[in-house]
Image 1: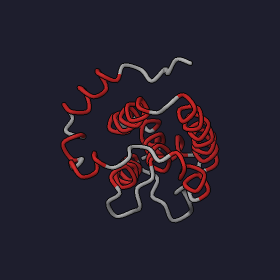
Image 2: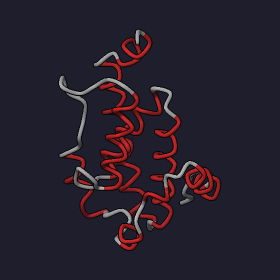
Image 3: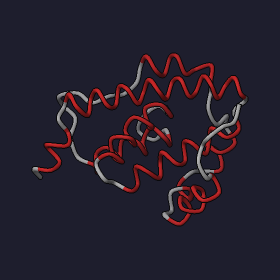
Length: 144
């Protein structure tokens, strides 16, 4: 099975040029990148939009970074993917960079782990689309 995760070298270079990777500590890099055994739990506790959420790309980016780094929230790459997807769909380039970084992290997974990760991401993408449409984010962002 071939892993189609884009151009990781380019993604890494772009991420570094935007300063995103410099904010990741060497301690966090030494930890397991993606804990496949914890994905089911993370999916069931996925942080999502609610009526109290701000509907802005800035808020989406802050949430994505918080979950990516585990600062201010428990680290969850699935929650980070959700919020980064909303940010990216809102037109925020930083959301795209976080998504690129998450795809880059998946490069070290075994074939079986990659399949589990891909299935979890597919579920997150469906939930993201449901929330994008349900909260009418495009309409709200266009009216700002």
